[in-house]
Length: 254
Image (cartoon, rainbow, N blue to C red; front, side):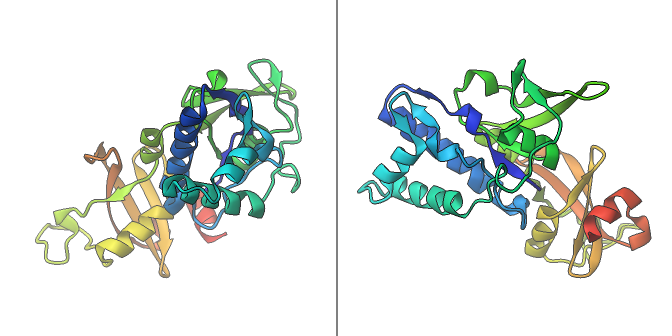
């Protein structure tokens, strides 16, 4: 799953250094939250991200420099995480991961931005909070084509939004190996491995997810509820390859 930091959401919105710290901390919390479902896909950025402003007189690069060896351990750890990420890339504009057609958001050309890359990669944006143009959880991008096309992009600005896309395994009694439920397939994974399988699963329609884990296929069903931390819960069980929809199978085995 592709996640991209939205450099256009850095507009100098912090009123002071304390608010700047809070904004960066919230951003990193989201990054950490989606790490398990991100899989092997790197967190992607635009090459100009470090030069974007957190406050009117403070760029992200300056904030990182100021906090890399800070006596405040929390800020120091956050800075070290971001520096490793920014130095490693990959940078979407350098690697040619931009949509080839002109992209507009709120009538502004965003063709050379992480937003264009989110369209190209079918990815999810992570935006800095308090940016007027990026407060909505979903934003609509207009693709200049024949005919023009509107693409909806998921946009995360809050930890609660990130948790909503991070499924948590919740074992169901009927799939227990000791269960007496008739025609219920027992789950053959322990809870930890079931969570790992769920982390790398692919969503199918509204309430199902499929995974290929340890040379076997699994179907997970939504419990249609959230746990007390705000994560959606799923139960699951193994299935035959023939039970996996073809469109999902292609993604699982590519």
